[in-house]
Image 1 (tube, rainbow, N blue to C red):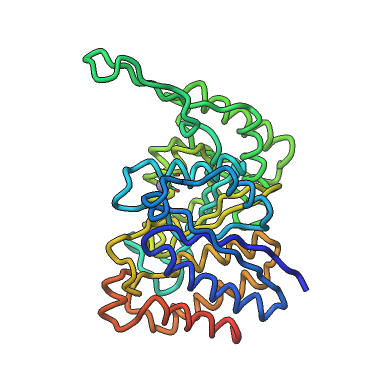
Image 2 (cartoon, rainbow, N blue to C red):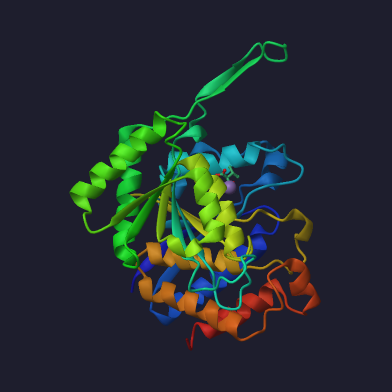
Length: 359
Ligand code: IPM
Ligand code: MN
């Protein structure tokens, strides 16, 4: 029997509530396919930081290395200054574990409403491969003469050929594996960022021509990408882009697929330990109310299983979610709709977990 060690990282706000349902569904699917999940919980987050001053010690990173994957609820606490937990926990884990891919599917599921007029599930199904280890996120730069009228602030976009190549390789391979339109779009800004995105563009075409001749290569500037994502989302199969652009366009992607309540992502190190998370925040005002939508976290669990190579169990989670959506039991994706419709976080998890036995 395949056994996997999963680090559970509930985090802040509604993180623990959604993660509980994610684990419930994942475990149900795993049991059906004879997979054993050994879990261990880590309590890092805003509460612990406020109590102890500790964010995420190096020893925790070392512990994470012993796991097959990390499953995260949410990070972000209203009483902690912005940046401390994001940088100290989320970015630290991504960087230290070299999770250089941020994989964010943008898929509209049946019955889920998109704000885009006249587009349905057949039009909205693409994946964004966001570079996750470098670019503007490296922290290269600084401030001089702070607080004076002559203050200087510099934040530099840094990419090495190696970082670009490994991200492109992942994106080309994913496009091949998806086997849909076999089209990879590089999203850049070659008309202004003439150094960094010149490197990306050259590397993109070199690798594509040499190693992936059957994959169609497209290029779109980032501003145009946001336009096409709304106007013609069906044009996209896989999009690959740098860290900052990827951060921005995947929030747009989340809205296109129905909102933060449904969007999941994976921070992936193809040769190491990867971390899966719902990409919405910790929604502190709904903490403990049992009305937050756990679907995004459940989809993150699906991605986790898929990443472990457990494709059947992963597909089972997805099918159970779709069956649940199609059953009409969900009054809406927002906490307000869930509450007013008499649903709850735990009821949603229970229903989907039950469905994993029959889908
Ligand atoms: C995300 C988030 C993070 C990012 C923040 C919280 C550091 O917005 O995962 O997209 O910018 O990567
Ligand atoms: Mn973001």
